[in-house]
Length: 337
Image 1 (spheres, one colour):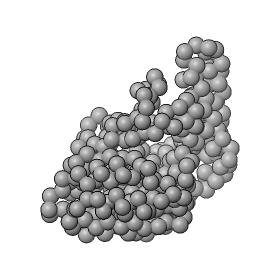
Image 2 (cartoon, one colour):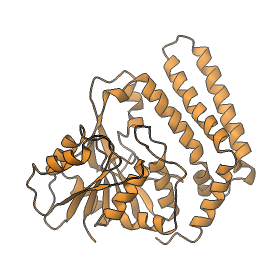
Image 3 (tube, helix red, strand yellow):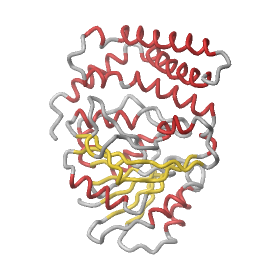
Image 4 (spheres, helix red, strand yellow):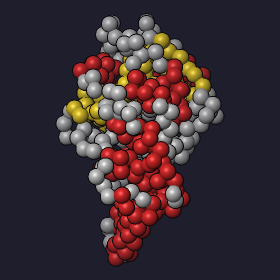
């Protein structure tokens, strides 16, 4: 059905939801565009559900369906899957509980999917709203926090393996339903409770690309991304880049699929292990060379990213090759877009 479903996946979101819902109440949506809000309560230990109902009741907005549903399986991927099941419209906005959408977001999302019929997912532009003064490194690494432009131009993101961050992303429901129809199950678990993201957003983009949909970007989709002070520490960023490195290996099977002319020996666990080990050793040596130089922290970040890669390939072992073969079979002939 034509319209927009705003899906907010929540885990202990009671403190963050009020401002997110206030911004949604300010949306300027033409009367001919139907829309709804779905709060997915994912095993919250606080009063997320009650706060959601109470806050939205403050706004007298006719014609907007608002509901809170529970997802008993922990994890962002499961929460979004529940949102997909509950959504009544074909245009889905995955609004995180700390995303404050600009007033034209819903209208823009709807129009963009209409204008770009081959787009499966469209990413927006997050504008950072730190809770406290950010550290000096934040400007350099702000993109790690799902903020900033995701392409140099509006439209299809070029390249063999394009993706957008999940925060504020706009998805075509029928594309996600196609993934479900072929029993697609990502190898990346995505965010689980308070743990950092582990690549599920990127993997979904890759899977949709394999169905021959486009991955696109538009700076018409702007939102503020509120960043808690607990996420603005050196240790948090170090953990974050470790996860990015880990995900780099999780996504190797997609890289292989997107590059069919790649020699067979480069699509193996052993080759990936050798490359990962080499990157780790080089990054470690470079970090040690820096000593107490101001660039020491950057060196630590590079080491953590490389360590994430190495840990992943050691833990996955032959699973990565099995997953590649499974994906090859699953997507063979599945691209119907």
